[in-house]
Amino acid sequence: MAQGIDRGRTGLPGGKPKYSIFSLARNAASYHQDWQRAWRAPEPKKEYDAIIIGGGGHGLATAYYLASVHGMTNIAVVEKGWLGGGNTGRNTTIIRSNYMWDESAAIYDHALKLWEGLTQDLNFNLMFSQRGVLTIAHSWGELREMSRRVHAIRLNGIDSDVLTPEEIKEKVPLINIDQSIRYPVMGGFLQKRGGTARHDAVAWGYARAADDLGVDIIQNCEVTGMIRNGGAIAGVETTRGTIKAKKVGVVVAGHCSVLGEMADIRLPIASRPLQALVSEPIKPELDTVIMSNAVHMYISQSDKGEMVLGAGVDKYNSYAQRGSFPVPEHMIAAAVELFPILSRLRMLRHWGGIVDTCPDASPIISKTDVKGLYFNCGWGTGGFKATPGSGHVFADLIANDRPNNIAAPYALDRFQTGLLIDEHGAAGVAH
Image (tube, rainbow, N blue to C red; front, top):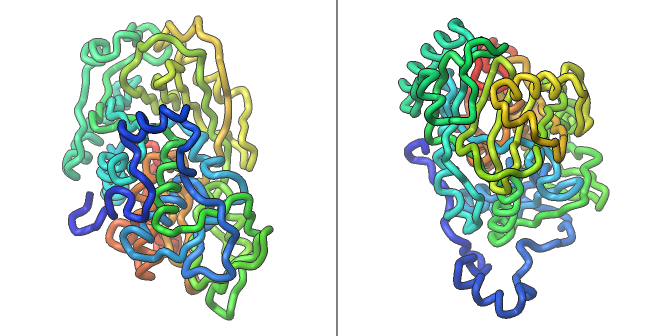
C-alpha cells in the first residue's frame, strides 16, 4: 500500500460481535438460528452527507472507507437491486497487479496490498487465495513483449517472473505444451502474489463493516433522477422518494453512462457483455490461475471444484447480462487443446457481466463539472481485482474534493488533454 495512506480501522468498532471460531461454536448450540443480521434494512433518511449510488464491491468499499478513514458516517448506499447483483457477482474473481504502465501499477498494487489484509480488516472470510496468476505466451513475439513487460513491472517494485514451457509444465501438470497445437505454449510470466477471492463475500464483508459504522445500505432503491441546485448536486430522486445530499458518488459499472445522462454529463463509455462459465465440479487439479491474452481465456478452479473459465468481450454494446455463443465457443476450443481434461467436463452455468470500457481502456475516478458529483467507472475487465483500491481512493476524492496521487491520472479531463493510460481492456496488454 502507498506509504502514508490509512487503510482504515481494523475489526468492527461499532458494536457487532466479531466472527471467530468461538462465535461459530456458540451458535452451533442453537443450530445457527441466533446469528445477528449482517446489516440493517433501514428506510432512507430525508438527507445524508453523501450518497453512494451502486451497491457492488466498489460502492460498498467507498462507503466503508468514507466511514472508517474519513469519519463520514451519515452516508447512504443506494442499490436498485440486491447487493453484489451486478458485476461483483458476475466475474472470474482474479486478483493481480502486474501492469506495465506506472499509473495502472499504482492503483492495482495499492488494491492488492489492501487485499492482503482485508479479511482481518473486515472480520469476514473473503477466501482470498494467493495461488499465483500465470499468463502464457503463444508466439515468440508475444513472449518478447512479455519479457519487456516484466522488466517494467519489476521497476515498479511488483513481483513478476518469466517461466519456460518446461517450468510451466512443472507448475501446472494439466497443461499441454505440445508445440503442434493451435496455441502452443512458448513461455509465460507469473505473479506469485496474485490469486482469487470469493466475490460475494467481498460485497457482504464490506456491507457488514460499513453498516456497523453507521452507513445506511438501502436495497431495491433505484435512482431515477439527479437533483441539481444550479451548478451543484443537491440529491437524487429514487423509487423510494427524494434523498438530499451535497455529495453523490456514482459507482454503477456498465450503467454509469445512464446515470451520467441524468446529470447532463456525457461519459466516454461503451458497455458490453463479458462472458464466463463454470464446469461441473471435479477433484482438485489446478492450484493456480492461468490467463491467455491471445485466446482471451482465464481459468482457475473454485473451492467447490468447478473449473471457472472467462471469455472475451462481445463486439456489440448491450446492457444484457448474457452473451452470444461465438465468444465462449472460441475460448473453449482453445481451452480444450491446452487442457485436454476439459473435453470430458459438462458446463454447469454460463453468464455475462456488463463491462464499461473507456477509449484508453482505463477507469475514470473523477470529479465532474457538477459540484459534489463524482464518478468511478470504466474499469472494463479489471474491476473486481481493483475493488479495495478503487473504493479507498474514491472515498478520498469524495471526502477531500480532490484526487490523491493514485487517482489523479484517472480524471475525466485526460480525454481532452490527451494524457491517456493506454491499457487494453485493463487486461495487461499494452498497445
